[in-house]
Length: 227
Image 1: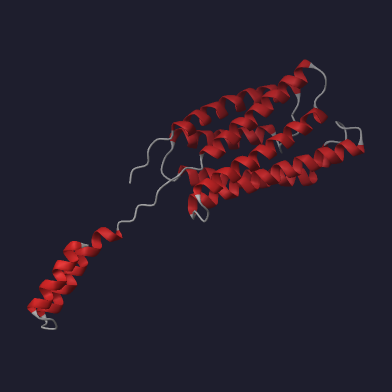
Image 2: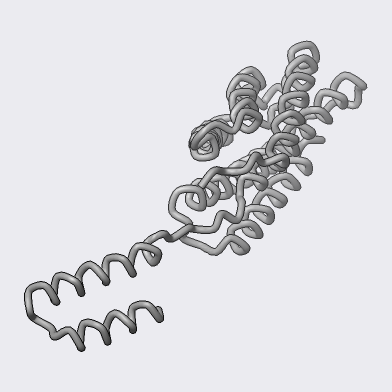
């Protein structure tokens, strides 16, 4: 069955690409946001994902989900070892602990969400409605955590505020794309359509071998036609 073009993913892909470009330029000039491993890494990886969502070639969603799982794993690793790069930005140990905790929880929730998306696209272990709600809730909490800790690494200057705003916008665009990847795809079963001809063929073989009488053959044939 031919898959229809998903306009939601097209919109999300274009929005993600534009937000990433703006965020990259601002962070390149005004310092990084410290919310992810590297803004350069983000830009290259997520623009590739955005292209997949725009082009929507065969199995693009599965490939994009796998890339996002790997991307999320790198950000979790950054959350674990990221305290070494924050000592010059956050002077308070207590605030640094709060930032790292929020960062780790946010990225772990992101990773769980994209794992559920990948599972939905490959095996569909859970119902569509459950997966959709779970992914939206996980991403929403992740986004709130990242927004909550962002002021800790934002200085009270226009440059610092604007680069953090666009960094958050790019995350929102990414999260929108991820929840759009969870679609309700019905499973088309073609086996029942082939069952009736197969039954007729088997019945005909039984009659030709003399295993059943003509009357029994006709009775069974009538029952098959009624199915």
